[in-house]
Length: 159
Image 1 (spheres, rainbow, N blue to C red):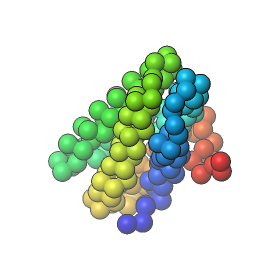
Image 2: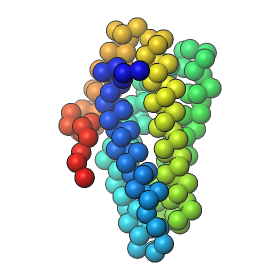
Image 3: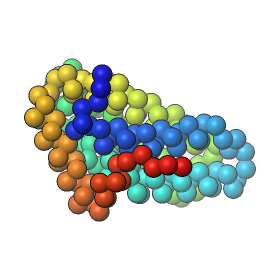
Image 4: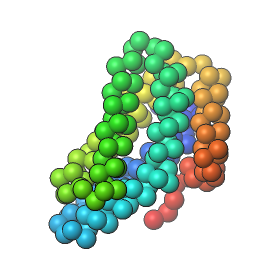
């Protein structure tokens, strides 16, 4: 299903995070310097984008979706993922990750994003009236702007 324009900014941010996951998966993670570099990149992306993304989802998307009983288990799982991912970022910030922890982080983040895209967003597009999705999209955009993120923060950045 084509992504509703109200959810597209979140999907673009998902692409940024998935790119990080793919790069971690493809790396050797064999030296302390490589692991330290990945930890710094994880913390940087979290501070620049992911934390605002999580906050917006938790304030606007999850409560709206949780009204539907068929989505409540999914929302519970996604909220738990956010807790686990924040903990992993804290470990990265403290320099406590090893290669297994980095791989586990990438796997969890990738799985989380794919569930949001394939299950949550698809269901919301099916269950929600277009006007409600637009309202959620505006609220998320307002959150991003209030956090100081320019509209371009949701665009795909070239590497």
